[in-house]
Length: 170
Image 1 (cartoon, helix red, strand yellow):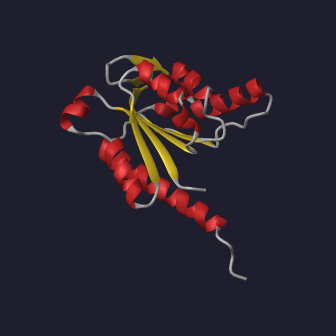
Image 2: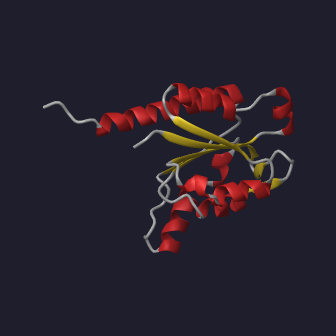
C-alpha cells in the first residue's frame, strides 16, 4: 500500500492572515517521511461538498479533514457552519473502507464513527464496508499540537503497515 493522505482544510480567515494553518506543515511533515500528501483547501460549504464528491477523494485511502469545530458542527473559512449531522451525511457518500480523520475541536461529540458505520451497513446491505476508522477530537486542540500529533500518527500507521507487508525472514 502506497502511503497516501489527502488533506482537506478550511482554515479560519484569521488563520490565513497569520499563516496559522495545519495543512501546509502537515503536508511537509508527511512528505519528509515519504508519505504522499495532497493538500486541498475548501473555503466554503459548496467547495467542501465538491471536493468530497470529486475524484480526488476516491483515490486516497486516508482523508484528513482539518477544520474549526465546536459542539454543534464545523465552520468554514467564509464563516458559514455545517452541523455534525450534515457532516455525517457528506461522509456517507464516500467514506466506505477509508480512514477518515476529522481534526476539528469537539468532533467526537456527535459519535460520527458509530453512526456512520451503522448507516453504511444499512444502506448498502453490506456491499460496502463501514469506514476502516473515523478518528475525531474530544476537545480543543491547538494547531501546532495537532500538526505534530497527526504527522506522527500517519508515519507510525504506514510504518506498521509496511512492517506487516514485509516478507518475514525464514
